[in-house]
Image 1 (cartoon, rainbow, N blue to C red):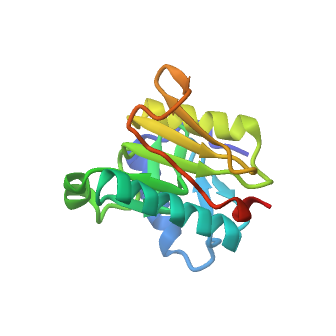
Image 2 (image 1 turned 90 degrees about the vertical axis):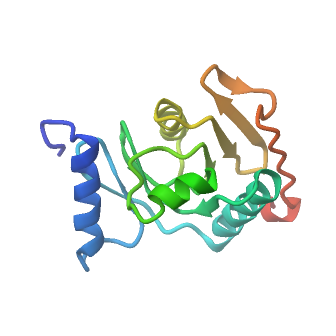
Image 3 (image 1 turned 180 degrees about the horizontal axis):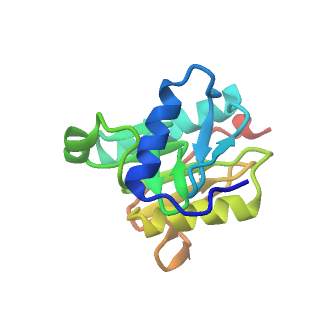
Length: 170
């Protein structure tokens, strides 16, 4: 059951930090906008490998500033994109904050069989509302989709090209 009131970004960040210090908190979780725990199964090794390869490609194409599994405050709670990229200056200024009080420039979601379309649509929209310049979704078959404030794009406006090994999606 949800709390009666949506938490402010500051309250969400505080709740996140409190849960991170609690040894009984599950290993992999997010928070909804009410500060309620959303527990997910830990990503598979294959999922983590794909996220790593995406982050590596982002760094190769855009320069330093990619990472996997960071936490970010959005208007629908604290979320953990599978990969992100932002300029080094933002890392220098905010890199020690957990969760980030903003959404990085690029957020990537690598789909798992348990993801629903509604869940991913909500995350894409929240990342864009939070300031992401582009959101990338890697599908179960390896198909790559790009989203911006105007909706789905036929290609990345930032020049991102992802050629992920087909063997990861068999």
